[in-house]
Amino acid sequence: MIEVEHLSKVYGSTPAIEDVTFAVEPGEILGLLGPNGAGKTTTMRILSGYLPASAGTAKIAGFEVHEQSMAVRKHIGYLPETPPLYTDMTVEGFLHFVARIKGVSAGDRPRQVQMAMQRCNLTEKSHTLIRKLSKGYRQRVGIAQAIVHDPPAIILDEPTVGLDPRQIAEVRSLIKSLAGDHTVILSTHILPEVSMTCDRIAIINKGRVVATNTPDNLMAQLTGGSGYELEVEGDVADIQSRLIVFLQGLPGVKLAEIVPTDLPNHHHRLRVIAEQGTDLVGRDIAATVVGAGVGLYEMRRSQATLEDVFLQLTTEEKPLDTLTDPDDVEPSAGEAA
Image (cartoon, rainbow, N blue to C red):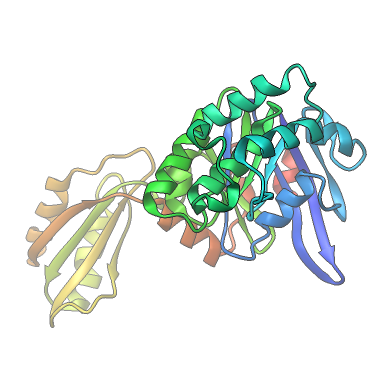
């Protein structure tokens, strides 16, 4: 449904995005995740036809964004970070106005407006002036104007920014309900947004896509998945020279290391990470610690989080081809990015 290939945007000599490549399948929700200033909004503005690209191509529903801009706009619904609302209009009046602008026929307009209000839980606010609505309801109106013409693709830029926890949960539920009937791209720098809403994520950092995959696959690829954290007592030199070596020799152990902490004297925190697809046996780890003559004070399972993935990818340089689904990107795109 959405194909982006080698997309770049340069302001003067400053690149906003470089060689961005990803694809979104019909009915899928893709989260564009990255820190502030990473290039998320620039990418979305190009996809919406609001901003021209400096290089590369983007297609939505088979139409090229730059060359067939008007056709693309008929096939997308766009919610910028600040919803484009006329606050002196009622909710229903505004949606009728937007539907007319977006080419919905006069006969279909009432049905489409009612559909958008129902999906966004706005029916009871239909005759309320937009300026009297809370921020959460205004965000709903912003989503309603994006879907009132029933587009196959929806682009949402930071759809929950500034909302309270209850409003965030409601908007998340609304976005998930759009999947299947619509293809959705949403941008965010809020980690729970991605894990609770999106089927796949594309992580963008410093204008480049550094990974695309499902959250679970990224966590497995980048961190080795599950493992154990231990608090032990002993001489640090002995732990490093003996215990760490023993632990790394256990089947399925990818990494064993001492983690810097502020624990009391002679107490140390260890991290043991499993090989991908391996479930470590805690009993073997505990027996190895005790057998090495080291005191074991605490041992608990640890599971990689999306935060671990995000921090790792936005603070280190990682080659895209090791972090992306092989079916998602052409070989040349993986090498270029």
